[in-house]
Structures are given as C-alpha cells and as structure tokens.
Image (cartoon, rainbow over all chains, first blue to last red; front, side, top):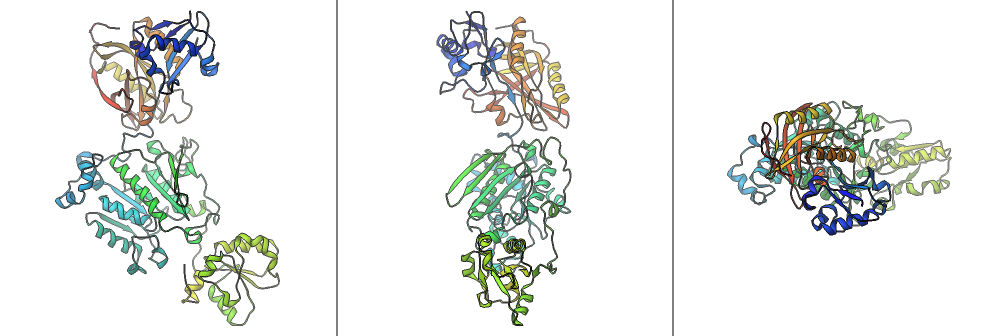
Amino acid sequence: MPSISIPTALRQYAGGQASVNVEAAHIGDALAKLTAQFPDLQKHLFDVSGKLRSFVNVYVNDEDIRYLQKEDTAIKDGDEISIIPSIAGGSGCAVEEAPVEAKSAELPELNKDELARYSRHLILPEVGMEGQRKLKAASVLLIGAGGLGSPLGLYLAAAGVGRLGLVDFDVVDHSNLQRQVLHGTKDVGRKKLASAKDRIADINPHVQIDTYELALRSENALGIAKDYDIIIDGTDNFQTRYLANDASVLLGKPNVYGSIFRFEGQASVFHPKAGGPCYRCLYPEPPPPGLVPSCAEGGVLGILPGVIGMIQATEAVKLILGEGEPLIGRLLLFDALKMKFRELKLRRNPECPLCGDNPTIKQLIDYDQFCGVTPQPATEVSDWEITPLQLKQRLDSGERVTIIDVREPHEWQIANLENYGSRLIPLGQFANRIGEINPDDDIVVHCKMGGRSAKAYDALKKAGFTKIKNLKGGILAWADQVDRTMQKY
Amino acid sequence: MSVKLTPEQVEQIKRHGEQTFPEECGGLLLGVVVDGARVIREILPLENVRKDSRHNRVELDPRDYLRAEREAAKRDLGVWGYYHSHPNHPAIPSGFDLEHAPFIEWSYLIVSVRDGKAEELRAWRVREDRSQFDEDTLTVTETSSAKLST
C-alpha cells in the first residue's frame, strides 16, 4: 500500500501519526481517502473551493506532482507520498509596518485647539491620539503648487500634517483657476507660493509652511528633500518627475506619485526601501520630447487633479499613520469618462539602474539631458522660428505670409489669426493635406504654444518646403506680445 | 503558547542572518512540544533558493523540508517552525509572510538585520483564521530538562 507522510504540524489532525497508509491508484484518490479518514485535515490541505492550498506541495518519492500528472499521478504499492509545505517569507510590502516610522516617544503634544479641530480623527481607532500626533510630527514635501499640489496642500494641512514644504516658482494665471483651487481670482498675478501660503494658513494655522521659490534641480533637490519624511510628486514635466524619483530613492524616502492628462490619471507610491519599485522600474526612459503633450497643450479636466491629488493625499496620510495597505507595488489608473479605476501590479526591476540589484545611478544626473530637453534662454530665437513681433512687422509691411494653424477646430473657435488669412489644418490631418500648401509661399506654422507646430514644421521640411518658420510660443505668445485683447486659454 | 530557544540557538540564527546580509536567510526549527510550548532542539540553516529579490524574499527548497522531516523523525523531533531574516527591516511579519505562512501550528521567528548586524529576534504565530500574525512569547533559556511529549 502507498503511504502518505504527514508534516509534523498536521499530525495532530491525523491521529498523531507521521505516516498513513492508503489504498489508492492516484494522488487525488489518496488525498480524498486521507481526508475521509481524518476530516480535520481537510481545511488544512484544501481551501473552501476544494483546491489544494497554495502552500501545500505533494511529492511522490521526491518528485513534485506538479511536474508529473498533478493529482492524476498514478501511485503504486510502496510509493511514498509526502505533503510538504512551501516555505517563503520576505520583508517587502509589509502591511503591518509603517514605511514612515514615527519616533513614538518624541511625538509632539496636541493643544486644546488642536484636540477640538481633529476630533473626528481622534475617534477613529486607526488614527486616534497617537496617529494625530504622528501627523503633527510628519513633514511632507509637495513639488508643485498647481493642479495636484492644490488638493494635496488643502487636505494635508486640514488633516494636521505638521510641516508642509512647497516648491514652485510660478505666478497665478487665469488659466490656472479651472483646477488649481489653492488660488483664487484675487490671486491672479501673485506668486503661487504666496497665495498657497495664505490659503493653507487660513485652513490650519497649526501647520508650518516652508516655501521654496525655485525650480527643483539636481543641485538643490537632495538638500531640500532630505528634511522631509515623504516626497509628493505633483510635477508637470518629465525632468522634474525623474529628478523627484531619483532624489527620493537616493534618500530612501517614499515618493507619492500622481500624474494627469485630459481625462485620465495615475497614482502610485514608489518606495524601493519598503520593497516596492520606483518610477524608473515603471518607465526606464522618458518619452521623446514633444511626444506626450503637456496639460497646457493637451488640456485637462479641471476636476481630474482633484481626484488624483486626493488619492496622493490619502496615501501620504496612510504612510504617516502606518495604517492600511499602501499603493506600493501597485499603479492605480483612473479614467474619468468611463468612471473606472484599474490597478496594475508593479514589480521592482532587478535591472533598474537606480533601485535594482546593481545600481549604476548613485547621484543625481542632468535631467534636461536625460529627457532630451535643451533649455533655451527665453530671448533666443533659432533661425527656424519667428517671434510674434517679427511676424506682425512682416504682415504690417505688406509681406505675403501664409499662416497655417495646426490646432484643433475647438481651439480655433477660442482664438485665431483669421484676420491675417490664417488657415486651419489640424496636425492630425497635416500629412494628408500638405498638398493644399503652396511650396512657393512664405509659410508660418503655429499652434497654441509651439510644440505641435514644430512637428508640422518637420513634416513640411521633409516634404521639401524651404520657406517655413515656426511661430515661437504659439498663439499664446501672440496674445501676450501683439494682441492683448485676444482670448487666451 | 510560547517558543523556547537556547542562547546558542539565538546566536546561530543571528549569525546566519548576518552571513547572508544583505540577502534574506531562512531555516527550520526542529524540536518538541512540551505543554503547548515549542521547545527547539536544533536550528537547521537552509539555502535561500529564490533567484530574484533575494534582499527581501526567501524561499526554502521543499526537498530540504523533506530531508529535515526524515532527519527529525530519526531523533524523535518534529519540524515546528521556521525562521527568516529581514535585512534592514523590523522583525515584524510582512503581508507576504502572512500569505506564505503554511501552518497555524508553527512558530515563526524573524530576525532583523540592520547594516549587517543582527538586532532583535521576535517570535510570531498565525491566527487560526489566518487573518494576521500575533506576537508569541520567546523564552531564551539553557537546555530545557522538561520531559518530552510527542
């Protein structure tokens, strides 16, 4: 008769026996007879659906049945069947462990005002007094006080995060107000940091706000980020996104990532120190410059940064509290039009140059170069470009210039150069309609800001056109420099 | 419930964790049950057979388990648990540990190794509904003279 050897831990459910003899022709049959004889074994070996539990391996004479005929593997007299646990463990993706460890003894006290303010938190067992003190002790760096930075700043301050760092160098513009709810109409023209600081201080005067009016760069990123527990990426460009990622990994800090475009957004928590991947594991290389349009070029639903920023804020608070399951190792995808969330599993890439097994990036690099972006001084005009003022002069002097607008029809409706004979050929139709353009004309192509028209410029050049210029800064620059009455968007 | 180790056995587990640092190590605990306590008689350091993520994952060879059972049987011992290391992480079970804990009857030891130096060793048990780990009492004493039970 074949025998089944029982692991030590399960012998108490098999009458204390180390080995049980069963009359059976194949493995499935043998296990069925074993559990019929000892019903207590059933739930230890099989799950509720009757399948062998994932950690239960069955061997026949030192061979794993998974590599034989599984449960149909035939057995004969004298065969030894072994039930063997698969034993594995690991420190990564700990749910019980807070990636941001609070120094419990040194947690700050809450005063009477704060106790009243946070009462709805204090009655949550997952927050409570200790959690609220952890929030007060915590520091979070927000890179960008724009679309994502707005909900992040508002809610993290309201939740009682003790210190917020804000990095931004921009000025509030009318076109920001559709989504950047930190700033109001009265703030247009002010520095975003000044406006943000006022608003946050109004929401919660107990929050310390540190402002950094600068562009985050390789030279300053580590120095700024090192004093914070959590880095939150609310950036709108790839250079800063890779920089924020690399600085976080080098400092061993979690990077709460979010990005938005049109109606879709993504969020994750990158934290290789806690066993998860980093942004480079997901996207090893940036896309070629110009391939992915920015929000200014492609548009964005104003509410979308609210949704994604809230997810980032929630993750940051969870990391501080050490509660729940962080988005480490998971990429959350949101589609506002379909109103659907999807989740992708992310794994750390052992080959990752930053957080892999043999990292080659050990300090911050030149991110403009890495992303293929050459920053040009604003005043410099390449010979393939024409400034709005130059174009205006040429038009005023009676020169015949064919202006081709490569934007979309709905953009044309907001503002256009029709008075100067501009024609609309959207970039998507450009290749098919290139024949409509006379190669002998002096041509100026433009879009909103100059990105899409640069592609049209290349297409014309390839097609053999020689007298082409790209309007530098697009129609927005025209509105700023030539026609201040023009509607901007 | 509790688990009993000798100071030498604690040292042996810590040393294993330090030797394999920054990778995880693992091994089995051979012993007996006396009045509900797992009294460990022998530490069996084993090889981590994971090919990837060895800095935060460990996996033991099922054949090594089989050999350990056979070896234990010869000496009237049983396999009553396993230990592994958490390099640069606290000695607290992870979600991965919970998903991969085979037996609720076992004792799970975790040693935290920081920058190559073994720090705390903690003992854990899996709750019967497998919903979480609870910390177990770890007693370190010289060899127990308690009588054996099966």
